[in-house]
Picture 1 (spheres, rainbow, N blue to C red):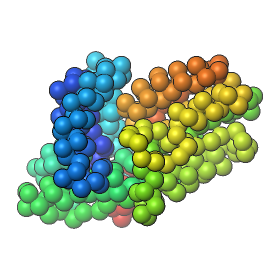
Picture 2 (picture 1 turned 90 degrees about the horizontal axis):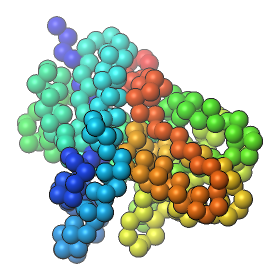
Picture 3 (picture 1 turned 135 degrees about the vertical axis):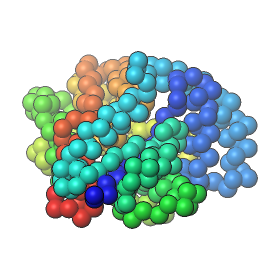
Length: 328
């Protein structure tokens, strides 16, 4: 019998509950990762444990409660739903059994537990598929780090394939463009489209991280697919933390600028997020909307992430299958 192929579907992670203690545990793991905050440990850890983790969890827990569902965290619920749909499609493309396991870089279910699941179910090789269309060392490489740590601890060494990015994959771009196509008439009638990507400290990009150039490429290629005229769309970066310079323009400022410049109707999307989560649902769909309307805008619409929609299922299944050597 042919051994199944494993696919590790990896995402950033989420607290176990929208409470301050759960958020504190999550943030402690997340913000202590040197790939996320690359300051010297002797400088950073006292700030993290002495200041940040005593203040930020309560505020973040309130934000999580705004978007939490009966099924749990949207990021986890959406990622698991995507995994369930991916498994049979990848198996069909490969022409052999496939197992998709979900693992989070921070929080639960962990990457280690996902790999153990694949091992227990007999996977002989594993494709690691981070749900980050655009590569960054702060996100994608953190997934690869956790995979190596888990395999070293377990002693298991399957054949590994890494999907580094898919920001310019034709199937992925088509899925994003299709999600925006219903809004094309509104753009023709004067609405503006904003692509909002997660931010990153500018110094990371200055040091060679390709993230910003890949975000710009995604936005441009999607705009080309939709045949959007120049001036009808723009790009910005959200989720800035701290006082240092991050990638610009900042989404919050861009929302105010667009309203001040006369944009009355705004359509926002977040093509750096494979599934909806705190950063899309609370930061953009709620707070972003309020910012734009308070600055003089009249209509704000957030276009949901691809989540477990057919376009994303098909594009990711083909990306994984190709990485594993199939013609897809």
